[in-house]
Length: 140
Image (cartoon, rainbow, N blue to C red; front, side):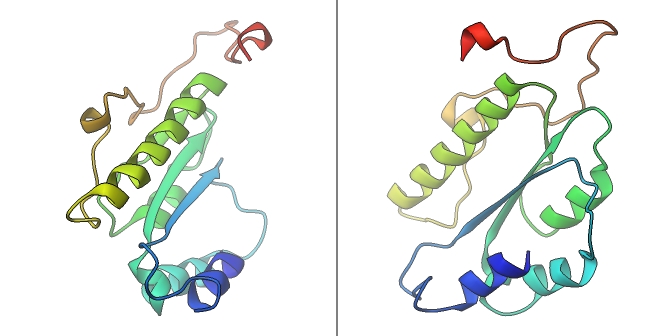
């Protein structure tokens, strides 16, 4: 979070004429270090507070509270992935969302998954016991 903030605040790395940056957090929502102050700094001060923030919860036991704090104040839902295909779909959405915004008359308008014909998980999905929840290697 600190590094992302530094890059966004540095006008040589992220010039003022650039499109609004999008920050994507892919996590189980269980930070291993100090995160609350860096998150507040990123989301509430300086140029970085204007960034678009998206998050995807990885795994059934992901801590939603931390991830929801990351996207607080945005128009995005928390997305979920229990397998590689759901993760792939999420990144397709991120790519299409950013691409759509760059071509739009209003680049601050955030398209929905429906706008770009994707089905994304916005609720936790329970994987049945004994089911392999990994995207098969044969499909890579």
